[in-house]
Amino acid sequence: MSFPFYRPRRLRKGEVLRRMVRETNLTPDDFILPLFVTYGKGIKNPIKSMPGIFQLSVDNIKKEAKEIKSLGIPSVILFGIPEHKDEVGSSANDPHGPVQEAIKAIKDKVPDLVVITDVCMCEYTSHGHCGIIKNKDVDNDATLELLSNEALSHAEAGADMVAPSDMMDGRVGSIREALDDNGFTNIPIMSYAAKYSSAFYGPFRDAAESTPKFGDRRSYQMDPANSNEAIREVILDIEEGADIVMVKPALPYLDIIRRIKEDFGYPLAAYNVSGEYSMIKAAAEKGWLDGDKAMMESLISIKRAGADMILTYFAKDAAKILNK
Image (cartoon, rainbow, N blue to C red; front, side):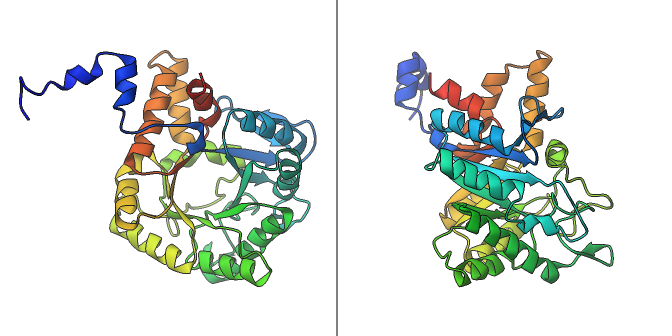
């Protein structure tokens, strides 16, 4: 094909025609909205570094769930902010903890909204790391039991899916075994398989109150320079029983999303993380770019790269545009 016989602009001259030949389409069905659940009642704490996002108590989570469903968003993922933290994150599997109570409330009020829960210790430990600390580092194997107990408590509360984000070796297999041994063989696991040690998590740590009190998470989260390692991580998680694998963050790792989708053809999620959200919101507030257009372009790029589902704080804003 060559000019003048082939003129690509012929198919770009009108909005309807552009839609007809569009290769990638975004819908609210693609979104999973992260929610931050805190203790107490009547709580709606704004997160300064994430405009439009809040810590919500369970009563407000119920109201939020109804709006989410009305927008056509099929799923939420819950992160908990407990009242009490300790060295071993003992409140993570509290049957009356914020996440457990939020699961029950959502399933009671909006039963067909898919409730996913983040399984990690960082929100529950006093030191902010993702497991038990020994010799100033997270003890991988000792942490597996805590993660399994947390996931089991979420399943018992009525969660539709659990999503381990801790990056401990072997945690998918440990959680799968705990769920199966307790009669939850039908609860799927969405594994944070390729989770990189990223600067883009900063605003999330404000929201989840999970900033490490010392050091960082590079000993268990992935090096941003590595691609082949992501493939090995995905293989391990699939072999251990993951039903969906995830890449986190999304935008700086579109190449990883594409590679995993092409190599495995497995259900794939991508997390459009807090820093990606806040950068666009901040630039839009300053008038440096069109926030809605930048949001939609970012989300379509993640789907175009190969993601089947996108965890994003933009879910409600994007759904409102897509529903027009």
